[in-house]
Image 1 (cartoon, rainbow, N blue to C red):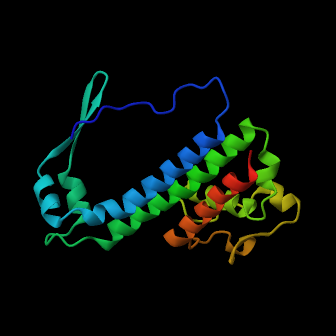
Image 2 (spheres, rainbow, N blue to C red):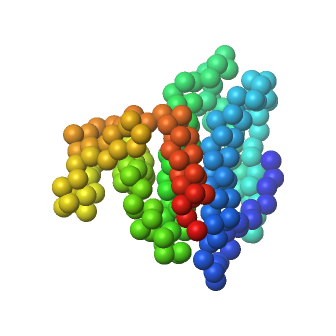
Length: 197
């Protein structure tokens, strides 16, 4: 597996455009979907075959080689049945990336185009913000700290659809499913299309 690394985010002189934001959100969504669906399309025989091979990644001064055997042994047992814990961790990683990157892209666009107040006015903005913080810090899933600005304003809960995050969950792992992540990102994309200029 040889791959040339290309920097897809060159230095910018101009603010990000709405089309670039929507493209970025679709790339994040596509990566999530590819990560969920792709492994299910690979027959077990392929994993048996690659367990003795090495992935090679090109870089400017040579290459990085990673043996695939350890990955295969973490993902599959001796009979090549998938290890559910591995799949759960992988899918949780995809979900964290989806939610974190979607929120950050919208924040970036809104800051560059002076539309932050429009994003912050969304009734679910604080929910997306708190969730992004939870997913981005430490082990990525426990509500360790309530945002100081919300605490100072006396806000102890935030809501999106029927899902609520509140200060009673401090110190606890949050439950947020991939289908909920897809719905939240869909709401964010709809917001970008319909409310941002």
